[in-house]
Image 1 (tube, helix red, strand yellow):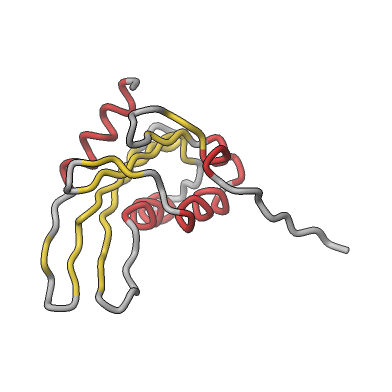
Image 2 (tube, rainbow, N blue to C red):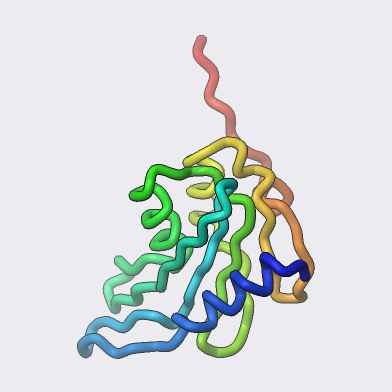
Length: 131
């Protein structure tokens, strides 16, 4: 694991702790930190709702990045309060890809602390073509 991933993992760990919001909601079970091609770090936490309308920590971190005018992610890690690294779910993988096609080369720190690219985690991608 390189120094950038060590920094990202520490940032994700700082914010990954579950907080009860109400009888229907909690947040922070997962923390995410990403690094952009400009070297900026953005973080986000998960929001868990009983009605399945929650959001992943990656989504929150990506929203922060987009709010700041960036879209190219070079590295990303998600960390659960259970002391476990998670790879992005399928929806987050697609979001990472769709906000910038260069993000297919985004490096992901996996649970086994190996590094892979988003393009290696995605199934065969659909491509829309104009007829």
